[in-house]
Image 1: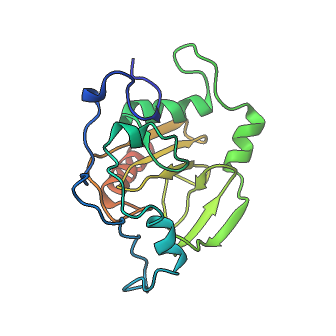
Image 2 (image 1 turned 90 degrees about the vertical axis):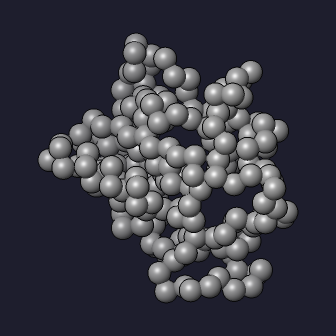
Length: 195
């Protein structure tokens, strides 16, 4: 059985964690996402640039010390199977283990709490409590879906209406933070076979 998603990768088994696209030799802050209508993201004072370049020089994200640092919103390590099983467990029991979300928590995760132009990502986003919701910036399976994309192209979500949980990971870094075309092609394929 795959281990649950976590921080830092498999304990005592760093050989099981594949290196990401950037290496420690590249000591520059990661580029912020490109948003429609914004060709260059000028100046160090722009919120997007500050958010994506908060650590300067950029750390080696493949370093086990970095991965073990428990950085909120960063350094999550999982296989696609473990990521999808995590989201499946928000919907119900998985392999006899208790579900992660009580019905009321599931309702909170998929109920819109905020919507509008994200001041960091510079695109329209929708959020429930703790999760991004289906929308133009990050299309998920349908209106009840909740989850989150990851920097570099990963995507995980649950869709309570269909009972589907989805996990996609990659070891290649891309500048996209929301609707990565690789993950979106898979989401469309899942939608086509479940329609």
